[in-house]
Length: 162
Image (cartoon, rainbow, N blue to C red; front, side, top):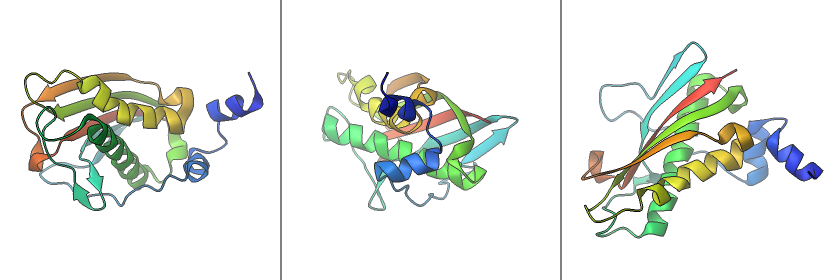
């Protein structure tokens, strides 16, 4: 293994890795209903479902009807960025992340759309990009008829902290 790959797998700091990748996290959004964005219990952080905010607006629509696959993948990535923003807001630094344990992806889609797994890769790939092996996780990708405020995608997370 070359030294570049070794550095990717064990970064000095995940916060520094964000900067190196040129990733700027969005401002955390306020909850839309009666829940908290993140609940920390022991060494686990449970991040509530996050919607895809791009330029301050929620990406809306339905896969298989009026949202292209590429746009939905980008929306899932935006959900992942919001997960990280909410998490950082709660715990102070992403350097406390020990392991991304699980992501749950919900994709607003028509009954004949069957690429939900490809959509949620937008969030999954982001976690691996930032956290390396610690970003590998279990996952669900589920098609649903609709999501809050007409969002195209929603993603939640369970993250182990150190």
